[in-house]
Amino acid sequence: MTDLSYRFLNPNPDGILVDDCVYRSLSIVLDLDWETVYAKLSVLGLMYHDAPISNRVWPKLLEEYGFRRYLIPDTCPDCYTVRRFTNDFPSGTFLLSTGTHVIPVKDGNYLDTFDSGDYVPYSYWKRDFMQPARVSDLS
Image (cartoon, rainbow, N blue to C red):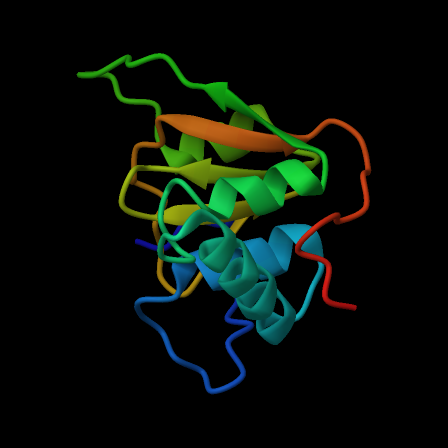
């Protein structure tokens, strides 16, 4: 059953549905087009000598835009799911991280190419203040 808080959204310009969740999600939460996010992460990847979508690189872009990471306590077997997060946070912009997938959340809706509502995030990112991009700014 599809959750009412799930919304299909795919900013990938070619409509690709797999293997680019980091680019899609950052595009959504940063309000940037997919290509700009790809370019910014590529520059950061070069700077850190790591893959642009590695867990060591993509968080740097969020930090440049004023996002801060918060841990979610491990509550399993009563796991805290993406769906529960959207119910608890009906407003704001967030990025949830599960370790293998990232999911953007805006105003109580999780935006993805499939219904990821049962995924269990271990952390979330929230913009604490607006800060313009620094080193990776290609504009």
